[in-house]
Length: 221
Image 1 (cartoon, helix red, strand yellow):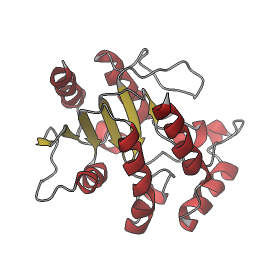
Image 2 (tube, rainbow, N blue to C red):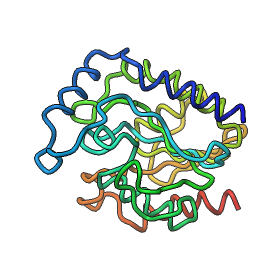
Image 3 (cartoon, rainbow, N blue to C red):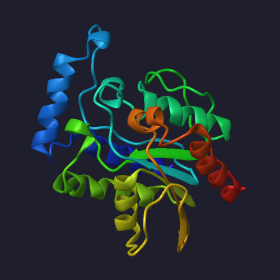
Image 4 (cartoon, one colour):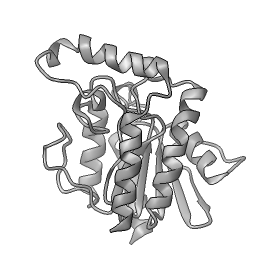
């Protein structure tokens, strides 16, 4: 299938990318120093590709890999609390075959969904620079061209939302949790990011989180 081959090609470029010296240095540093609880594990320590169903109608755009999550496991939203929240809600609404995302070989499969991010390397303090986001942007452009069945885009956080607006050339739309707009062939739904900071403080409750993916499911039904 040509789309699968095209995706493989862009993924190979992503993994080899070293456009951002600050990020390349940071992920190498984290991979060597490690967190104490993961000291016996080998870290991925390279840029991360998206993953999921190449025929997906749902595209989820996140911020960036977590330093000790995706940067360790080699798969986005895997091995951290954000990944737990995302896997559970995707499973709840039929977009995944299991409710957890712990390691790259855990058997998780996405159904009619694809996960990607604004930045492919874990940034210090979860804050990529504008230049770093710009460097990553062409990868997202290529992904969307390949994922030709996408109908609904869920943006996790303001940076993902801003990236999506740039991707679709949309202006004068404001970010807020649950906000929704239509642009040509896509329906875009916004959510707060399921970061530990948001979920533990109650800024993002499970009901608020579920409502976003319930809306996505209803839209695709």
